[in-house]
Length: 72
Image 1 (cartoon, rainbow, N blue to C red):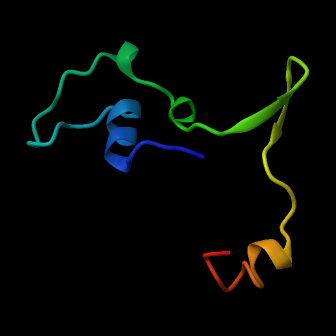
Image 2 (image 1 turned 180 degrees about the horizontal axis):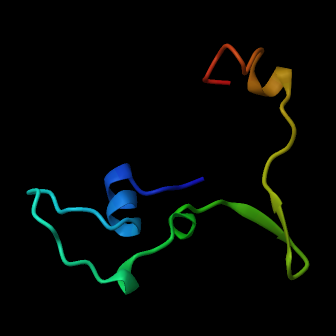
Image 3 (image 1 turned 90 degrees about the vertical axis):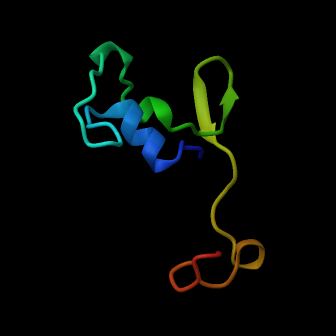
């Protein structure tokens, strides 16, 4: 999964004030929906069949407890 930093995400997808606190003129046609800014790496079977890369969680490969260890 890939996303721009939070400031870029907000500035490209929301009607907000600019950094110095003054109202900025923003063309709504220049805005992008946040879902278009978030990218996923997926595999493709055939023409239109997408699937996530990877597999189910494995204790031996991924780590012991994903609920208590954020590195898992």
